[in-house]
Length: 197
Image (cartoon, rainbow, N blue to C red; front, side, top):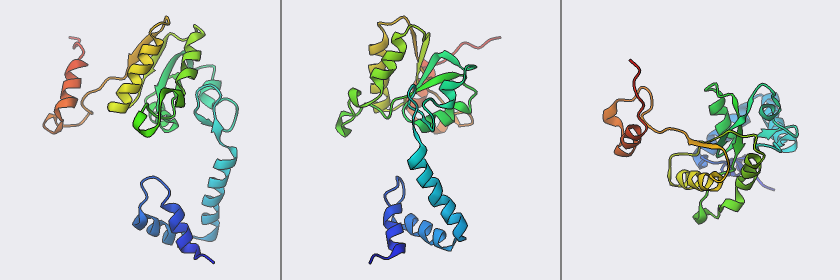
């Protein structure tokens, strides 16, 4: 019979970013929690696995056929912000963005077996084909995989009558320029805007 503590540690190690030491700390913390709190965590995991699914339109996580954003008639459904993962939506929602989203499910990475057909790129094209979309904002990460994905999407969608834009790069607010690397500074210079005086 397996040791319940060791079993929990082994399973926690399966989570991204959780090494053995962190898993041990979490396991001991859970063991010392009041039973009702530990059961709430277990129930939340079970509910997530049983009830959560992907939105039939944008592939965000939802309990219904359509997510709350796609179902909201007040949102601007003519603007799509393309993101890599559902977790990115949470960040964009904090900015006050009022359009809708499209979740790709990752970035193109042939080395990792993620080819364009494994992502939700065709589904994005189908949404654009309707003629009801006026802008697609490509919001993939500013790294090699994100750039490759952004370029692939831009090339695919250029045949449609839709504005294709890419999120800007540059210096984070509050950073001292001396701590910025040359790539970030270069992107900041490329994306410069006129100053209104």
